[in-house]
Length: 376
Image (cartoon, rainbow, N blue to C red; front, top):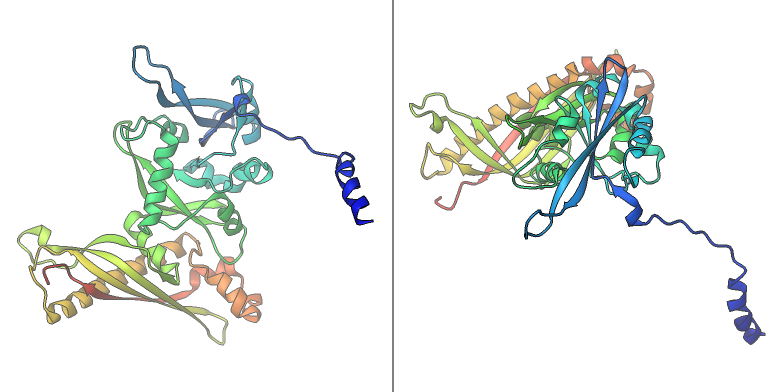
C-alpha cells in the first residue's frame, strides 16, 4: 500500500492546478522615487517619477547611470499614473520605490487621500520613505547631486543617515498609516528643503501632523530632541551643539558640542478630580563632550558645572518642543495612546482632540557628561 502511494504521488501532481504570475524585468520600468504636487489651476495631481537609466557614452567611455524624470497630470494619483503609463514604452513598477515626496500643499489638505493607492496596490513598496518637501516635489527630483548620479538613492541615503544619528525617527509608508488613524497619537515625517543651486537638499526637521493634515514643523535641533523624548530607551548616537556661555570675548568659546551616547525617558500621567491631565516627562541623557574650546582639560567641578548648564539648556529646549507639538495639536509622544492602554476609563471621559492642547506638561532633561575627551 505504501509503495502504491509513492507511485501515484508523482502522477497526482499533474492534476494540481497552478498559477502563473510573472513580471519580466525587460517589460517594466522600475520607479525608485515618486513626487506628488497639486496643479492648482486645474485642481489636479501632478506625479513625477525618477527612473534610473543607463546612458550610452558618445565617446569611448563606459555607459553612465543617470536618473530620468517623467511627469504626468491627472484627476487622482492613480489617474496620473495611468496617464504616465501611456507615455512610457514599458509598464511602470513601484515595487522598488525608495522614497515618496509630498509637497507641503498636499500635506495641508489630506495626506492619506494621496497615499491611498500605495496601500491598495500589492506591488507597492510600503517600506519606502515618506517625506514632506517645502516647494514642488518635482523640483526635488530634478536636482543633479554631484556626489550621487541617482537622485532617488541620494535622497534615500540622506534620510537613512539622519535616522542613524537620531536626527529624525524612522518613518515609512507602512508605519505612517497606523499613526494617521490612531486617535491616541500623531505622525511626524521628515521635512526636506532645497539648498541654493540645484545640487543639494537638506533635512530641515520634522513635519508635524494632526491626524492626516500638516500643521507645521520642528527644526533639525528640535527634531533630534524629540526623537529621544519619543523613545523610552535609546542607544542611538546624536551630535548637537548648544550655547551654554554668554561671556566669552571669542564667541566660539560660548558653544559646546556633545554626542548623545544613551538616553532614557520616563513618562508619567496624572489626573485631577476634574479629569484634567498632567504629564511628567523626564529625559536622562548620557553625553560625551566632543567640542569644548573654552577649557582644555576638565576636572570634576568643571564636569559638574557643565552638567548643570547642559541640563538647563536642554530642559528649556525640550519645553519648547512640547509647546510646539501642542500648538500644532500633534500628539507625537503618544500620550493619548498611553492613556487608552493604561487608563481606559479615564480615556472614555476625554475628548482628546480638545483636551490634548490643554494638557499640562512638566518636562525635565537631566544631562550627565560621561566622557570629556582623550585629554582629560
